[in-house]
Image 1 (cartoon, one colour):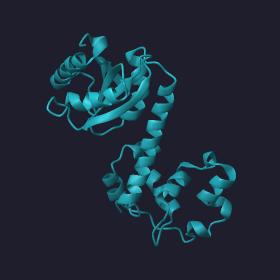
Image 2 (image 1 turned 90 degrees about the vertical axis):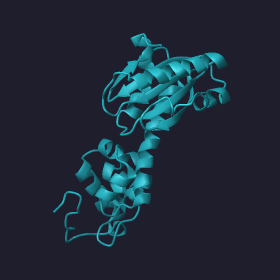
Image 3 (image 1 turned 90 degrees about the horizontal axis):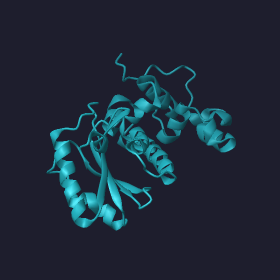
Length: 238
């Protein structure tokens, strides 16, 4: 049997609606609080409905059996999740992964709202959790106020970074709309290599010059790879 296939259901197989009320994830959450639910119960709520053979709880448990942890599930693409497990279609896969993305953004937003960015380590601490598990390269612009607090961030491109894909107009549009004093550039290296490439350096120089012309300073460019980071300021590249 392939690892992506379900095990045979137990003879005592029950649909969620057939379980005692205190064992049903939704009812349990309403009665005792969402924090009392296990990982599989939280996933079951997102999955919502099962199949003729398997309940949403069975599917949720199979997801965790196959991938081990919620952190591993969070790194998948919708197609990966849909393809590897019966009972999860495209809509369910997107719904599950959207919940992980919301959690990442909420964690970043909560930390950023009360913290001034005073060093490269400050910005890396906020964005490493969001980008360390990304499988494709993302380029973000982070808009800062005069007090060096994050106003907002925006993903500019997805995919390999090069100067033809990063246009100053797109990078500074949000900064202008938000009346930002400065920006920080961030992108990740899924390969795990923390060294800036020649394209990374070229793009940074292009954006620094563009920022000078419109009066918005580029404070730094941070590369995130795994749980580490490289700062262009610390490297003397900016």
